[in-house]
Image (cartoon, rainbow, N blue to C red):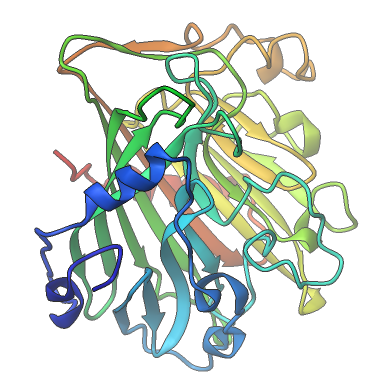
Length: 379
């Protein structure tokens, strides 16, 4: 039996699969003693870049269940994997563009790529964590930090133009000596992988819609999110695409560029630059925030060294340190932090587009109009 789910789960077809049996007790037990569950060497040590090479494509998606992850394929080529546990959290990694280029930094899951910075080991693939929940840190990793524990796969579906996974996570407090690790936040997440439009030649987009629903676990106490820049919905872009390297560019929907985008509010941000396989080839990663997402007008923790994150809670760390463009002189869109009361929920919805070439404001706004038509699905 897998340590992450019952054989019943892996023996069925991945089409509209619903899983009822999990070994959450095992995960909690590991957390109580401060252990970190393993992720197989196939999941974290192999590029499987041959799977990421795409020729002329028809856009047929499939989800393939593995003991420690779910792989998402387009026309038989790996697009991304939902890794049940990566250090202290589930992540999507690696993520490939339609032509096979890897669109996130490889370290620390694969530390063999030449020239990559080995900083911030908690920056991996695409993830969702925050640095101040009830005074504890789920953003960084290590002793005294919280863990986001995958507990259950609710549904995996595929076929035709998309594939998706819906899963549950528990945000667990640190397992400290003499203290029991407990869940403070229940997260339901939904990832939909799609993107079939051929932009030019056979270079396709990869689009991932990312939806999250948060509920407090204790029916008698609120969950308090602090005011910090450390978070929240994030991607670490490839090393060659960094904004502080030749060809790296950052653009937001209000016209800020480069380091001017940090700490500002924008409907979308695009991060583009040369990709590692061929530095004459430019690709980009765009994050769009749905207007019904909680505090869609939150500030962006987007750094020229490659961190790319939207933060709906942080204010104080940004004010006074961001550049004084027109967007930088605007009043903060809300107060920092938030108190999630018992029985309430927080809903977040993002679209991440991995695309060839660069974006203009006009193109970004057009894609935003498409995304605004989508509905939130999680209940």
